[in-house]
Every structure is written in structure tokens, then in C-alpha cells.
Image (cartoon, rainbow, N blue to C red):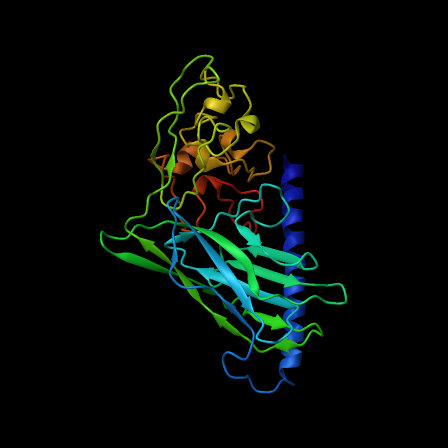
Length: 342
């Protein structure tokens, strides 16, 4: 287990160093070139990155936030920016199911010639999501006029009846956003912030509570009833391939009975019987111990059981430091958690 933890830490640090090197290179080129640039042109004549305002939250409590690029006749071959969102009302889930280094809730729409690098830092409250998009191989490609990236955020606060909450989603200042030309020169640009609109008619996500013991359930067993989930939980889509509606496919969980409660994992909404629904624990392995969170009684490996860290109500686990990660999944001092899932 120790070797796995060390390897995980090394990989995380390696990714951080690569991102820092990429970002540093673009910033350096931009700063050097800025000295020789002419004054900024008037708005509308320079390229822009823009996030729309008042993006609606769907019935599942999710908002799809696009980052839109407009060239305005200027060739742009690289972009560096960070995204800052309202942590009180919005939640970003950094789950990376295929372990490719890019969270599943960041959906890029750029030509294949571009290389994308991302970094999610919950400790950086002025730019939690950091992004680099660049083409390293000449002849360098340029950005088309289109949405470069869509960010999926979950609503985590509920407005009073008849009211609407506007949650900011904009460009952060750590690092400051910048664009570069194919020659590596800094490009004058505008960066427009946006927002998510959360109305009082938002339907909160649902999850399945722990099932009652039923020996040898049949394949046609009806899924258990649902209960209100915590704000910010990204719910699964009920499907015949997920009989217990816990966000994991039945083939992932298997027909074994991990906790010995008489319910096979594929029909058990709490596979390790720790009181915390599998939906909130997820398939990740935050402590690198080789046991996924939904089967691990101490998911973050800190010696405190998940049930204890979850607090009084395991259906609404606590997040004492307010960083968007439940305490039982939170690994102190780790800057990058590529395996985290809820």
C-alpha cells in the first residue's frame, strides 16, 4: 500500500510540474512580447474568450458552462487561463474515470492538433480550474470560432421561494488569462465573465438509500426507492445496467456480496455497509490502497473510519473545510486528486 501511495504522489507531482512548466512558458513569452506590443485595440476588434451569463441549471441540478472563443480576424494558437466559480453555490466533481489526467466534467472541443493540460486545485480560490491549450508541432494550428471547453458544474445551494441565485463563473487571476499567436507572441484579448442561474424550481438530485437485506435477489428485482440527496451531488441516470441506482454499472460492482449482508453488490446501494451510499463514495481510490472508495471503510486512509468522518447524517456527509470534498474522501495536503470520485 505504501508503494502505491508513493507512486500516486510521484505521478501527481509530475503532472503538477508539467503543468507549471507549460504555464510558465506561455506566461514568459507573453510578458516578453508585451513590451513590444502596440496599445490594445478597441473592444470587438480583438479576440475574446467569453462565458455566457445566466446559464440555466437543468432538472438534474447541473449546469453546462461553455468557454467560447471568437478570433475577430486574429490568429491564436495557444491559451492559458483559470476558471473561478462560486464555491458556495457551485460544485465541480474532478472524477477522472479513465485516468487520462483530464476530469470527466471538462469537455474539450478543439482540433486534434492541440494538446490540452488541466489542473484542479481546490485550495486556489481565485482560479480552481487551470487550463492550457496549445499546438506544439509546426505548422501551428489556430483556434476556430467555437466553444473550446464546456465545464459541468453542480448546483449546491437552494434559493428561497420565488428567488433566483446568480452564481459567478469567470476567469481567475491565478494565473491571469492570456492568448498567444502561432509565433509565440502575446495577443491582446478580452475575457468576459459569466454566471449560472439557480432558481427555486430546481429539482434536487436523488439517490438510493441502503437496501434492506434480501437473500439471492432476482435479476428482475425492482430498484429501491429514492431519497433526497445532498445539494451538489451529481446523480446517476437510472438504467437497467445500474439496478441499485448508485452511479456504478452492475458489471463494475459484480455479483459478490462484499459486506456480507445478503445483498449482492450490484443490488446493494451501500456496498461496504458503512452507512454512506455508494453514490457518494464513487469508484475512485483516493488513498491508493487498491480498494475503491465504495468498498473501503477508510477511503482516505487517515485511520478514521468513513462513517465517523461522514458526521451525524451519512446521507449528507460533512465537508468541514468547505473545499467541495467530503471529509471522508479528503486527503490533507494533496494538491491534486486524479482518482477522486463521489
